Image (tube, rainbow over all chains, first blue to last red; front, top):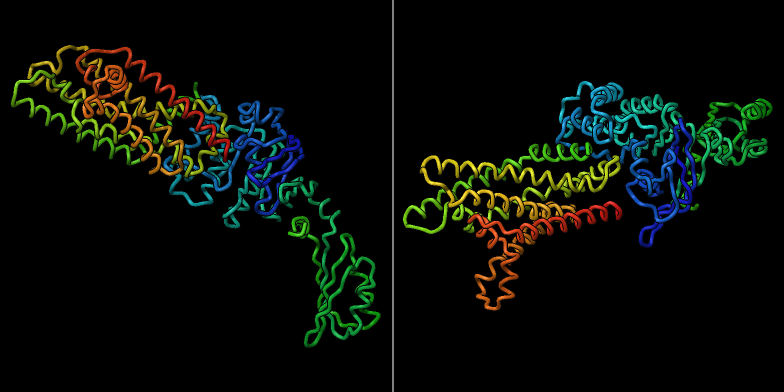
Length: 309
Length: 251
């Protein structure tokens, strides 16, 4: 559905994205992750024919975004950052206008608008003026606008920014239901969402792609470690012994009033819980608490996009 | 084509959703009514060679509000879209740039035509009440309103171009007001400067809107003026199109 080849965008003295290469197949929900300024919005703006690339090419549904821009745009629904809307129009009026603009035939406009109003839960505000809506509703109107012409591809630039947890959940569920029939490219900072929604993740930092894989593979293959925390009493040589367990990278000890806390950094697939407990019973430690923290996408993200890289 | 009409309808609606349309309408109608009253009053005192229609369109009290209305109605055409960010949603929809530029231009032109429709009523009322014609030939009606339309298209195009140049509505209004006033001022120069060289005089009378109005309101429809206005409008619209594309590409 999307094919990007050597896409580069340069501004005077500053390269926003450099030689990007990636593909998004039909039906995938792909998360575009990266810190602020990484080039996510720039890439999306180029894909939607808003910005021209400096070099390289991209196609959407087989249409080049530069030479066959009109045809490419017919296949995509775009929700820009900060959801710009005409604040002087009513919701249904705005959606009818956008449907007509995007080429929905006049007979089908009413149906199409009705469908997206239901889909995005906008029935109770359909007669309200957009300027009077809250941010959550505006975001949903923007999403409805992106969906109104039933596009094959959805490009969403940070669709959950500024929403409260309930609204985020609703949007997340909506997007999840859309995948399969449609292709979705969504850029976000909110990592737990990515794990829930996306079948694939592309991590971009300073204009280049650092990783592109399923969330599970990213967690598995990355050096991003899991952690374990053991609080124990009467464990004088705990640190040396725990360091010797295979899979444990590093142990630090913090001595508290009545116990010691051992923070352990582990290799990706290590599971030293059983070994630690065996050591504990051998040396008669009194274990107060064992906490295991599995590696999360945030760890992967931080590691890939740390300032040093 | 359908996209063009959708855009056009939206432009016209958005005029009437904003309070500025009603303020401009009121102010314009008030001043033009007052102008009409003043001219009739002046002509009441003495015998005069000029017709009511000529008198109405000659003085500064007509030209000044006329010129001022263009910046007011065109300043928000592009600037507002840039400010609100809807420029992005507009250009990423499957619409051609030319459709957007033309729809905005014709939207402004439509609103401008509405500003002028009531003035026909003042002349009709005059004829009804006094029994005299407001003009010496019916050609004068056609001529005057044709010229108003042509001048309106040129000035509207200039207004749209100014709006496309900037994100700030006040800047847009200033640019268009200055340009239109300068253009109009060129028409006053011959009267002020007392030029004798015939070539220069010809040049000025060719481009002077004041001169055109004097001719057209007599019923003299000069095709050179028609060509001047239509070709200039086409040029300004072309520039507008280029600026629109430039703004799209530079962001």
